[in-house]
Length: 308
Image (tube, rainbow, N blue to C red; front, top):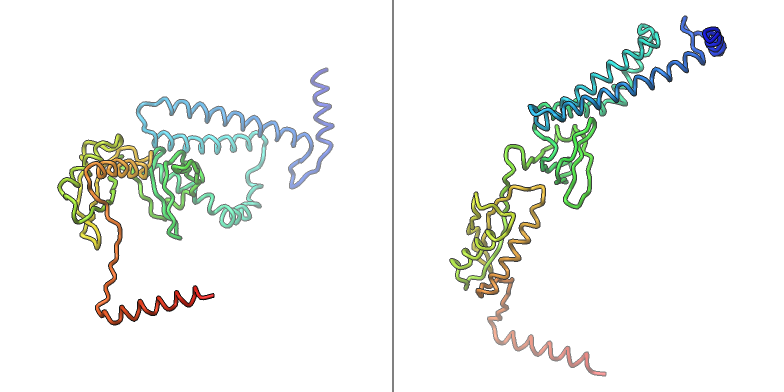
């Protein structure tokens, strides 16, 4: 009874439809297609998640290799799932050749960037030039630079988070064609330069000693390599130095390190009477007669303006 009832429902649903090139399209085939698509989607998602968990627990792969393995396995699983779904539905693949030309044009014009970013992302992961957690600076064609830490490498774009918690999605192709400065590619140790100037009358040896003391007192500055002080130039109004110090956590920012060193140095300079100069200009008039005429003209103008 149940079998006859099911066959009756199938015949009723199949009656509502039409035939194209020997293939029957009806409510029944549409319902079956929806069920197969949902089933294939669920199975593919479960398999992908299980693979991600298995790869995440692997101790023989680093972060980049794990991410690359996840991407490749996901692509393979979805490709196999789509083929299985087409086979279950009984779709004749030769019938799809009619649409292959249009589909190829769609990929060539509309999806060119998408496939380009996909291939670029796989190449970046295989090349291992960048990975999640790296601190990078990316320059675009206009000369603007984006500095931040890589949070995620996706199929289409790389997520870069800046120090002010802004998240930029940079297309993978941009990382292939533009200049990328990776601060943690081979080493996480980064050198920071802190410029400072002192007055000519200052004790330079004492000033250099205080600069090193301020740099060493900063908690994020490394002891090895040790900080150093370089005499950079003898300027118009100051003797210019550059404090060289090293950090191992560039993702925490570099401006705050400069600020901390300069704040400590300012206090040390005040305690030891080391002057930080400011620009000064002296005006000299060589001809006293011209100076007297200038003073007289200014006095006459002031008196004229005060006259009611």
